[in-house]
Length: 144
Image 1 (spheres, rainbow, N blue to C red):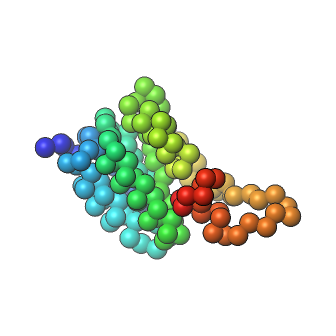
Image 2: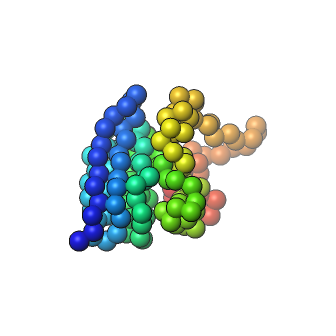
């Protein structure tokens, strides 16, 4: 049985879910439950701290992606703290391209510092007519 501990707390309007251990087929449901609990509020503002996670498999990645979509559907956000390389988790996040979907911070301190500044706004060139549905899709047309 894989050990994964999850804790949840709120600081300055941000719900922080902190995970410690490995995220795999056996432990991913614990992470999913912790994230679902954090995301259930309207317009959730969730920060997932993966600093103490040593491994994540495809089951864990699926939980991250589903949770991201759930947060977005509720008008909120799910961001992550993942230590820089040589972290195996950071490498997996980068190889799978999740770092282009999620806002990823190298440390909790960086996340808290940047949370104080406004989030970047999506800019569309003047004169461009882009339907709102298109803004929720990746360049290849798949839904975010």
